[in-house]
Image (spheres, rainbow, N blue to C red):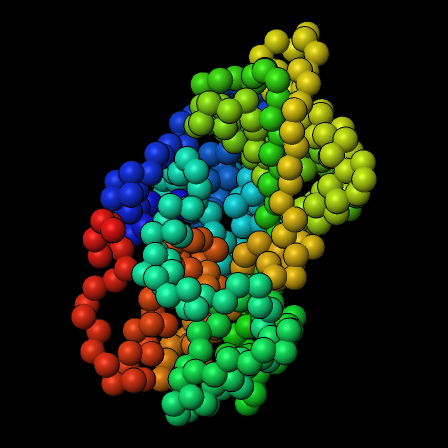
Length: 410
């Protein structure tokens, strides 16, 4: 769970008895030479840059968008008070944001940079299952309420009762009074569903003005813990290379990574490595080959060696390796979640959806909100916004309550 200060799903954790762990302990930072020392200040310079970017666009809202990479390079070049080492490493420290937004700083928008400096995040042991099951419980009382295994291909929507017809790949059709479309932004951008009549022009423009990223995760369980047990995360920054020099794509040490210590969170001898596009596509494709797990492990092995508390010891054997497969999954929109790339205007989609809140065609999902976009709680909130919109369409009164305020008891 992200943005826990304003995340209303947090209140479900005690209600549902979910075990949790805040992951905001002190991380360890690494470069190819090993663990960075206590005077490694590049991360603080990167934080200062993020603060400057936010101020700059607040003061100059009409200034052209730039990539994060271009802007941070200029920032450190003009900074009068940082050392040569900080000027060299701060842009690399900025790459940590890649592992949250799912794309590289060469692509990411500086104007809409999502850079987390103050928020707290927590892990729920067991994942979101309890929340999903609790939310779905009223619907599951009717075994015909939810139809699984259907892939929607066409949506005919209208302005009166029973005017909506949803058609699936299997040829089934479902009619109704309204429809809420919750497919990922990646599906909408690829026109994987046909709408009749066509979507309003402003909604189409909003979809086109917002990009889709590809965060990836690699989970590896070992026979024993060889990394520092008391730190939540291990953050690796790649060595800076001269402008115009291609990176060595054969080495994991050419890419920024954030590795979560699942031992301290759940007691499993496991690490979770976060990666961003374009590396995500390569790793997820690699993992699907007959020898994929061995190849993925070999690729990440140099990173694991850096994390050893006893560098002279060989790495222990690993017992399992799993990767996400979102970039090859059409139902995930061939990616993970929305991201602002250079030139994007994410507010256009949110504005368009609000303008058309009186339609019987509604949209929901993490891409349909500005606060909490890319996150579960943001997606959750958009479902409730769509529901409130349809209550208005049907002339029904909203009781002022939302899902999380109802009793957690059966």
